[in-house]
Image (cartoon, rainbow, N blue to C red; front, side):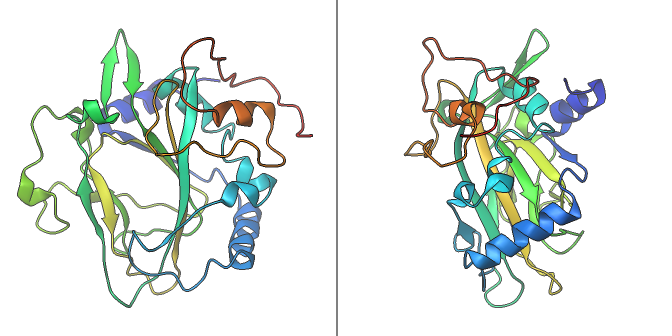
Length: 257
């Protein structure tokens, strides 16, 4: 399975793409219930205080996000057949309280930080990329993920005054429905608007992948979680190049032992 010409073009021009309704309503309901059981409640409206981790140990539905068949063609397209999951976390934000957003950050010139986008011979090359799973709706004007579309290919620095969340004419909030998946290159200038939707929290799960040779986070993810398939364990391995196996996208995976 490969991505379409239209999907490839959108990724190259925008720096991101949204895949509609990858998770169904029953899956979302079960994952929401699991979050409640795990004590994810009373979140704050601050990106730095709303994060949670360790969700890959919460059951098969969560582990399957690692190599979901809908995202695998995009991981291959953006990173090649040898890639790894570098780190992952969830976000739970509520409206009200201290309204805080996360200023815009990153741009195409950050190559030396493992944050880059380029093409060569009609092939994409990326540093860190993000796969963000929406578990609640993020409707226009209510906050969530924002970016400057196309900034991953910019040849000049973002004007300093445009790194804030106000008075930037090029910023776009990317609306999503629960079950949608947002995929973007970290080289895209992006950030988080404060959550203002009083009807529901912002709940999303972010998995961040990178080339086989690179490690962004300080530590390697735990590959000893019970229930991981062989392919998932391969994706969770640390950074190395020599004799690293390719992550096969299309073959059926044996059940976890």
